[in-house]
Image (cartoon, rainbow, N blue to C red):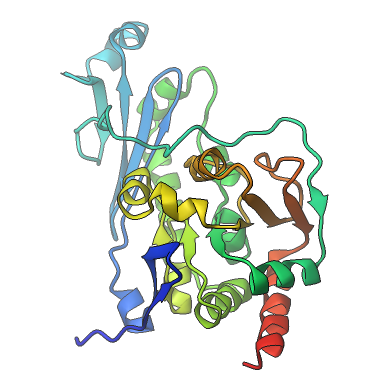
Length: 308
């Protein structure tokens, strides 16, 4: 199949963050795989899925392994990384030296960011250099679980390790439920509106979401991982960005916002959400509202302003 795409390079600050459209046919061919892990005090819980399979693994230290009943200890494999229990997943332990966070997360316990209105946001986008950065909130209307909802799928109590080992099918079904939600749902109005905003106004779109809803809407986002960011976004790039517009992002999970603030203390964070997220400082901005209403309205105003 011949691939057609539309590529735009944005300012000098965005020289390594291309905007690329993607057809519905290409989006349908994207690999439907997930890999996630939780680093908890008791050990590492990781899961992986493919189109028709899904499983998980547990990695424990020797001390935690010894605390389990003998009948459960016998189900682990001993490796250099620890003791591993695997259910329909690769038996390899998550790489200990594999970076998850780009930098220290931006977490502000108490702050009073300035509340702004839609016109204020229009002015920022029209007059400043901004990045778009989406979190799970934009996909919530498509029934894709947010990180809080995903976390609630698993029994994180003091006996969660034993529960997972005694009821692996139940855990695997929950993993498959998340897989289905990520890959078998359709984009929301907010996804389509954001695609238009990004492409028509030459604004790079970054995401930490695992679903393919941006791609299905017609745009290929820059998927944020520590490795990808370090390779493709330089400190000099971020220093030239006036603001990062966070859309449905409740938490600086990957540390991108912390890195941005570290490199560019005068840079601003602007959040569109139903409530104040944990990363906003006193000098940052918050637009309170439903993303599914705000983004389509924003698209219309920006198009009228630019005569598009």
